[in-house]
Image (tube, rainbow, N blue to C red; front, side, top):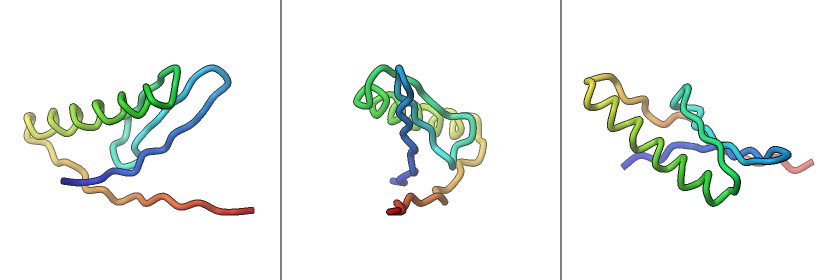
Length: 69
């Protein structure tokens, strides 16, 4: 099992999330909980589709860190 980094962004009226290691994969929802569920489903479906089509599945390469200022 692989773990992919996910970036969550809170906008004025919605939440979004994307995976840097899976270009083009992103979701939008009303709440963070919704977006967490949607991105989990989207990653699983995306990887399943890549495998079914015999395309390479990118290895997780991104890491997440926080900077205190």
